[in-house]
Image (cartoon, rainbow, N blue to C red; front, side, top):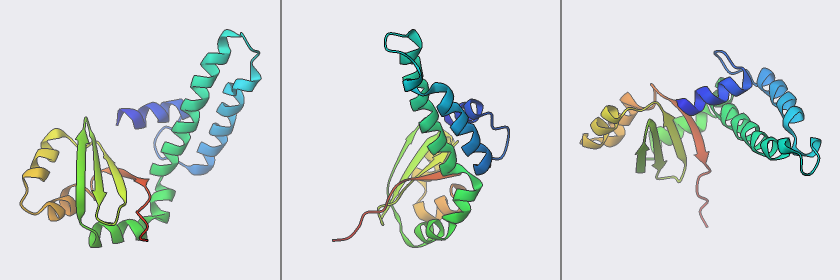
Length: 149
């Protein structure tokens, strides 16, 4: 959640993420912080490189959790959570990463340690996730599914 709030603050997003507004703000920030805008030896050139990377990362991150992106990918997400079982999972801080049997990986933001403990102690992992993780937390797809040879 900290990461989401940090990127929202960078782009000046108040509540809902709208792709058109985000894209306009992204272009403005890239123009402002593009490293080629500064001379070699200028103190701001190093800062501009850091800021431009942050802007690019933030843009891609916010696009991945935008309601429009989630709606566009809802069909494949629904198929993954209903058909493919959970192959592996990792929890760090408030981030839960679930790797599915089909090879896709999703990150869920804001998952507390208590919810994670309940999940791993559950005798039916997929059922617990369907009821308590998938519908309640902001998510994004992080890796493409593995292609079969």
